[in-house]
Length: 334
Image (cartoon, rainbow, N blue to C red; front, side, top):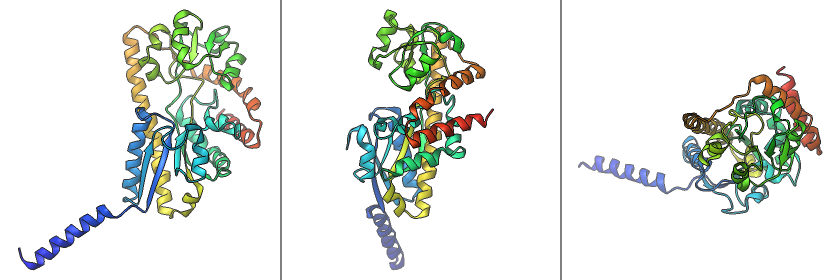
């Protein structure tokens, strides 16, 4: 090998090792409220890869499961104090600080598709309201995500709002309970761990539970053979946040990386869960389970009843601002 070629080879090796040895400009820890085995946790590893790639290695994010650094109910304060740099979690965990967190976390009856929430966040003032709330805790909102609208578990066919009258159904305390009471159902407060046996023994006829794929995997639809899908009542939101001081210190190009990858993640998570639900629906139908889909007018009717309950949970300035913005969003769609 000629001297010139050797020099070039050595320089190439130096460049290669330099690229692997230099630390990223930013090394962050984000904690999620999910367990390490959850699908969402797996999706978040993909998101962390996007951040590293799109930032050319300048940002490295380690995503940890629930309780890895702090309790899942403490991530808001931990992000604000920069103990962790960000979180992916349910805003409802922080309802004790402001009821707005509960409304944003699950605006019962508001959404029948994730695209509606994303549109309201972008075009209905939702992002600004939520960001203002989080800024009080030195936290920056990057965006919101969700698994999709929850299905509804039922042992009896419920094809319209009127069919809910008198139905004994499991609904946790809070707005979910209030809304189902308002439509004439008889809510029963049970922990999730008791839903299966309560359906099996006839203690309840139906249940608020979770997404269709999970219901199917847990055998809910095998004993409650009239599930409603897509759902009409509940779509829990996931907040994606980071420390506000750290955000303010970022150059504009890295701020754009964080925004764009979070938007991409939100779409990706909805699409991946939709695939899981689609496969589960196919499996259920093959077993002779009747999967009921409500017509749009019945979903809208349920939403109008739910709207009468939203003000009861809007007992803080930002909670009221959020509830009014959601109501205005739907009024604009009429």
